[in-house]
Image (cartoon, rainbow, N blue to C red; front, side, top):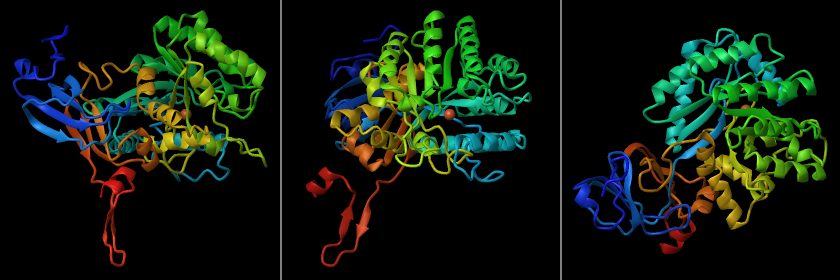
Length: 450
Ligand code: FE2
């Protein structure tokens, strides 16, 4: 049968060949993140045309998943691609603080060239693809009248479009009110094709300016029909409450479901009574949230002695309130963070540790926070392992999402639109133990099997 859009959408196992005499690809014996086992995915013309257990149909290529996890691709809802892979340029962040990082970026961006920006961003996208990370929302600093980084990342977006979705946020790093000309630059960036409005209210000169910046930027988003994603309350100050203004402005302008608050680290330190009022307001406004565990645990609490705050926002409480929450990478080898590799399983692994989300159900929520949740946040079309969706997926060397998190599992194969983009050999160690040489892969069920 044919779907509304003319896509193959046969749902009855065994009937696929009537519409698609020869599938492009048949994936067999896969485990899905939701726990379904023995699953097959039939791919034709870049889409899933059938998804069911135990399918059999002729195909040009058959991929036996061998009981391992097939997931939709990883999605990063928060990144800075203009700064990535610049670690040590022109110097290293000595204090390790957010504010020295911003100052260091201010020094660096004056010296950036278009080609170097493009080259570093493309190199990072290569890393991402190898990790099964096929959609990234990147903030791009617009506090530079040349808009060099904007032009460079728009060029990168064009070049990577065949294999990676890059969504750009116009980000006034130095404050849309504090930095001269920033609002004008932000509007120019939107005119050039940047599609999301950013902000940084906690970096404006005063609480009042911060609130005013939120009001101005939300009004602009409503006028232009754009999504909003603000760096918001990235601070240990429990009185940094711009999320309240962002939530109120979201409701005022009818932007429910289209606004993301990134970081929200001050929520970690807020008074519990105040948070008990804030969470329902955020849920009412359908606010979306990005926590960036690697960066939050590194940058926050820097003014503490002991006890030292973790600094990450209240992830389990936000999820329990029904708020869509994603874990973001934020930084890789840049003025703020000296590590990272585009591995969203590393990000989720850190997130579950910092949030103490160690139950089986909570760990699966953390896997969702780097796959389906950010996909919804970015508004990705046709994402998922369902009939009619793009045939984008990752085969992992793991039997379920929890094992994938534990091992930061190898991405054995990465597909987009039914085409193989990347593959990595399985992670195994060759043992040379006296009397019993062999291989081990750290997979529990594997080791039991052999
Ligand atoms: Fe950020």
